[in-house]
Image (cartoon, rainbow, N blue to C red):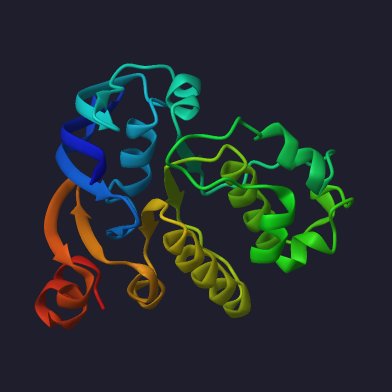
Length: 235
């Protein structure tokens, strides 16, 4: 079942066009990687889907309903979660207080998340539930940002560069977390540059170059396609 469908998506910053007719789909219980070099348009795609850009054309359908032109908070309330790459935690609030800011009612067809359940996925957070976010490491803040989004009981989560700048042990925990979310039936669109990380967790991949989808297919096939990897990722 397709939960998120994007078609002919174009996005602009001022007069500059950044995305050109981007199309992608994400189904229930599926992890889809959005890959490409720096500046390829990965983060812009996620912001456009979430309604965070002033000028966007094309269609974004979530759960069969158009959310194009909808305010970001309304899109979030429908069950589309977004974890930005810059870890926007509330530094003066504790872990528990940060989680409370993301709390939404249970949602039919979506996994139900509670702090205790999140602490089983992220044991580190459970040990510091009363610590202020400003006193946490970058990896811990990333876990908190993901957890706060999950408190909204989303059906689909957009994860923007979760492994960027993370220590290897944190990257490993992130991979375990994504696989756990997948087992829960959550759908994930993952923006990522780390091919090894994306390969560990993803079913399919879309590769962007200069704001256009240049490759779409199974992640396994992409990893084995030396020419495509070198052309679009340089690896």
